[in-house]
Figure (cartoon, helix red, strand yellow):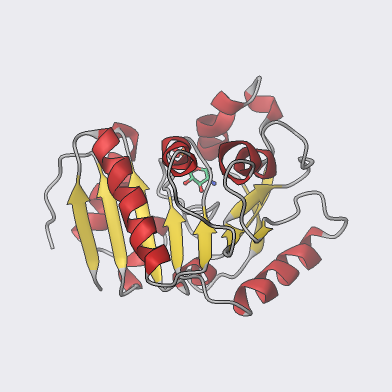
Length: 235
Ligand code: GLP
């Protein structure tokens, strides 16, 4: 396990550091980026939009998408990625699971096959308040591949802020599995705000448990964690 912990109390500095890491990856030849959504990513993508970085020769794979939400829905992750990043910073190819595919099981399988056909050089990750990564909720097997998930009440409540009401938050999503995520060469995890403290403290305690999906990244050999939380690594 190699987890490099960097604590940046100033969020602007933290996001600048994240852009610097992405830039270093690009300069060292990275061409495939695993991308995430969620509030944590909004300032990161703003900084990328305002940067000189060029992704026009790169491809992206997104972690997840809501099921039953059309691409043009304002809260689809497709719309999120277009408005926060892709419209301003085009990639050669972008990939996001199709949440309105006729057969979502088949779509999950096809997405996993796509992932297996490439190497993600850098996977950018956020973390849910309950420790989820992508939409891999607590209890998900670390061997999981891309699959359809039922979102927990906690996740739907956390994401309700993006919708008119909690009833509108989809109940299902397609997500890369934990094993799909861990195949990336390098993982950049961003955890900002006190709500993420329990998940990050559990991670830094070093106990690997399926009850807290983010702890799966302790099995990976190249992880960078950027956080604004003042916490000490306990080993
Ligand atoms: C969402 C996404 C995750 C994201 C997480 C945290 O549900 N599926 O990929 O990391 O929740 O979101 P936020 O950054 O808004 O706290």
